[in-house]
Amino acid sequence: MPRICLFPGTFDPITLGHVDIVTRALPLFDKIVIGIGLNAAKAPMFSAEQRLLWISEIFKDEPRVEGVVYEGLTVTYCKEIGARFILRGIRYVSDFEYEKTIADANRALDNSLETVFLTGEPKYTSVASTIVRDIIRNHGDASPFIPDVVIKSLRDK
Image 1 (cartoon, one colour):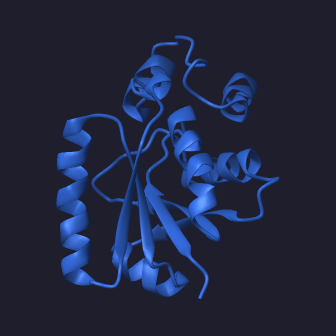
Image 2 (image 1 turned 90 degrees about the vertical axis):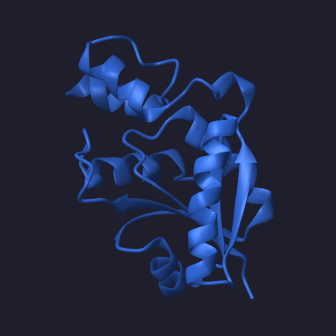
């Protein structure tokens, strides 16, 4: 049975921290699905189509990584794609506390799912999509935090 993992998030935009987590998780799984979750409570800066395009471009040479857009419960989507694992990145202790709460809820909904936490590389600890969006909104240089594909598309706009 293939080890399929869902890495859910908004990826608004995808950061070097996200890419680092996926790259380091590749040896653990046969397939990683980067799931752009649609959340009515959030108003993203970038369209789901743009975020999916970035993910596809960043991982174009890695056939075991796929980007998708999904709506609804993460555990439901995991069942749809046959994922038995959920991947989450942790930067700080506060991230762990928040993510553990979600992992516990997911386990209560489906006890066949395991959440795998990877800590971010120290150089990406300060990288958060929220901060990156603020930098972009205020016309700052977000290039230390985002992949070249994202930088290029922002410059082309």
